[in-house]
Image 1 (cartoon, helix red, strand yellow):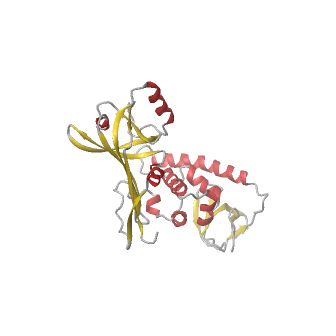
Image 2 (tube, helix red, strand yellow):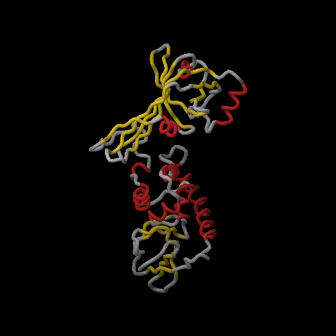
Image 3 (cartoon, helix red, strand yellow):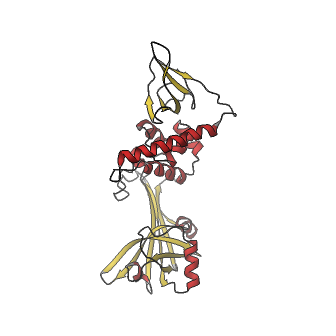
Length: 310
């Protein structure tokens, strides 16, 4: 038995030959199209891993350029709505992990690596429409699908499920032959990018503190929102350190960028409005945080850990 993505798997009654169940093949586990398959059943819209028995056969469909992909996507969208309701009812308000978290992690890792959906689906041997469904809807992919996706993305199933998300990064082993090199100013600015989450080090009345903040890079200055009287607000009028970093757990490598410079409170209404208009996100901590603080870099340094041959 051989199949392609989009073919139908039909299960018939041994006695009458009537169709008992059918579904669309949305995932392949072998490049030659042999079983098992990930099948989305037409009666339940659920996806399961199937090892077809003697009562099953593949109904091939047209795979040429004229294939009605929009119809396939419509079936996915209809399935997504039904499955979303089922997931909500099954898990309830106090349920454990929302399966939609898996899709968000998949999409984030795919985009971080600069991979398209089509390329990721090809590597994972699954239909692009099914990958889109997994990324956009509260789906619960099968363990086999997760294994193939993790392999295609160069990560682990545990990472896609959010395992270790409450633990500090960098718990893996160090590289066998690492090298530590300094980053130039342009490399540092590229890693700062335009926005993200960094840490500002300040002196407070209770002693030194390092606080994570959502930041923006505006005209080379670091800007973040906080509340008057908060620990980050203590940065105003002092020289502070601001740091961002990234750790690649899989490759045991990473980088950090350090900004040092004076911090000032933004008091001009027009400048504050400009910063608010250009902000990519509200502060993750929520609450009233309308005070803008701007750090003008006087020193910009960075370091990177990588394999010695890179």
